Image 1 (cartoon, rainbow, N blue to C red):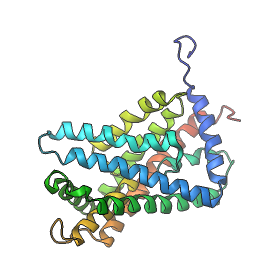
Image 2 (image 1 turned 90 degrees about the horizontal axis):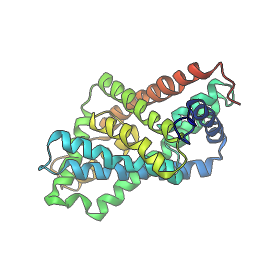
Image 3 (image 1 turned 90 degrees about the vertical axis):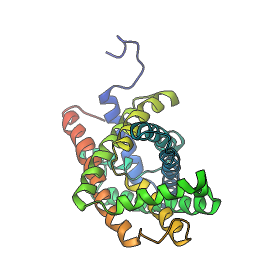
Length: 271
C-alpha cells in the first residue's frame, strides 16, 4: 500500500516491530547511560514547558490561540527527545510491547521506568533551577513568573481522579506521537508526526508528569524568593499531583497504546 501511494514511511506492522526492538534495547541498557539520557529528556521537556509558559503569559493572545500556539512550541521538547536521543518515562511506557511478547522481564521494565523517571525529575528540576537563576521569569514585567505559579497552583489543586484521567489522555497522545515518529525516516517526518498530538494534549490541558517536574519546582523557587507572593505550591502538593499523573500516564501509554497495539498485531510474528 505504501508503494501504491509513493510513501516510504514504515507500515503499522513495521512500527510495532521497531517499537519492540527498541523497547528491548531500552530495557537492557546499562544504568549510567540510561540515567544520563533520562536527565537529558527531563531537561528537553522542561525547555518545551518553558516556551509554553512564555506563550501563555502573553495577555494579548486569546485562550484558544495561546493554548494551540503554546502546544506547538511545547512539542520542541518531545522532538528533541525523539531526534537527539533521550530516555523519557512517558514514551518508555511503550516498552510494554516487548514485555507482552516475553522479550523483557517485568523487573527490567520496572528498572527502566524507575531509573528514567527519577532521572527525568533531576533533569527537569535542574533546568528549573537554571531558569530561575537566569532571571527568565522576570521577563514581560514578571508575567512569566506569575504564570508559572498560577499553572503550578492549578495543578496542585486538581482532584486525584481528574489528575489521573488527564494523565491517561496525555500519554495516549504522547505515545501516539512517539509511535508515529517511528514511521518516519527523516527529521521532517518525525517533526510532523510529533507536533500535532503534542499540541493536542497541551492545548486540551492534559497532564504530563515530566513537564510538571519542571513547572512545580520552578514555582516553588519563585515563591520562596518572594517574586510572586506567598508560597502556595508545596512539596506535598507536587507529590499529590505527580502520583495520580504518573499512574495515569502509565495507564494511557502502557495499556491504551502499547497494550492495544500488542493485541492487534500479536497474531503476526514481529521477529
